[in-house]
Length: 160
Image 1 (cartoon, rainbow, N blue to C red):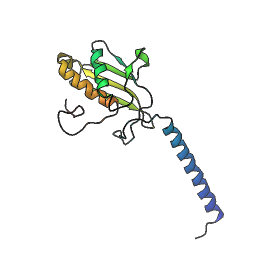
Image 2: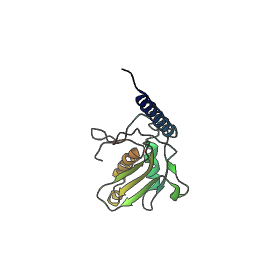
Image 3: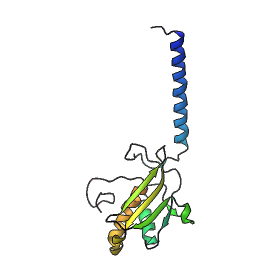
Image 4: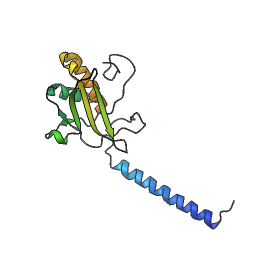
């Protein structure tokens, strides 16, 4: 099959567009400092920690417990969050909420990097320090990009 001039021009144009898209994707991906195991976000993006996460702790949340929760994952993730000198500059905020359950909200950029997180600790969990520590370890796992796992009694089990 022979291509006429118009078809060749269209094919050349598509090749250029494809090359631009590939180069743009490589530029976005190379801007991320991809570390840690190959995991995916719920919407299929690979999880990447693009910078050293820093965290702030709201009044009423035991700061030493938050520190221990992040240190729990040190062996599994090369970038462990550190306490922010200025809470406004933190990329992870640990806050108290008047809710039944604790949770974590993650924000991803278009390349799949976790850019911000808010760990929401239910006030009622403050009454049980052992449970609070298990919950904080679990939520810290989410901050680092970990999903729930099947089974019970594991740090990333769905029900703590």
